[in-house]
Image 1 (tube, chains in turn yellow, orange):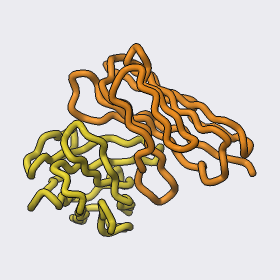
Image 2 (cartoon, rainbow over the protein chains, first blue to last red):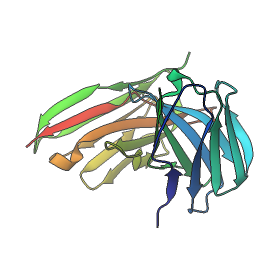
Image 3 (cartoon, rainbow over the protein chains, first blue to last red):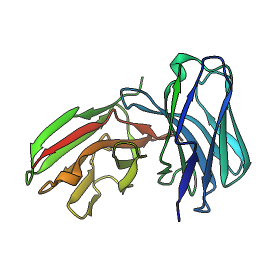
Length: 112
Length: 111
């Protein structure tokens, strides 16, 4: 009965590669998010989708492209990976844009 | 620019002690949330606050939405080893639509 799930949990890859992280929520929420947590544990929003529509797009390189095929899924594709992309990426969801957010377990991305 | 400050940065306390941490914002918030993150896991929501002055408890945890709407505190009473983790405050500015997070308070408990 996992609420917000992400795959993979760990991702190790070479610089320059393209990779995707998937997120699914079974809470019936309308809004989903991607956050990046750096090595100092600072959490910063990257994107937010509401009913499959992009609502928040922070200053993120356009190598990062979110895709929401339906309300329950929000995937993150990253092109031409760089060393600085190494971080833990969290997916989250909420009933609406101003409601409490529930987080997935995170994907630890390591770029070598 | 708008700033959100969380303190203390870390705490190392004896089991059984009470703990207090707080967050202050340079601008008015309309929501305060407190999360706990354990190693290898995502943040878990502890308490949500929506009104100035609101005081809410969740077991041994108590949090308050400051009257000025620019601060919030979280208290943990009679700490136990499983309280270990990083505690984050988060909130929305009055005219904002995104959640911003504090830098976190690392809590360690000596048993």
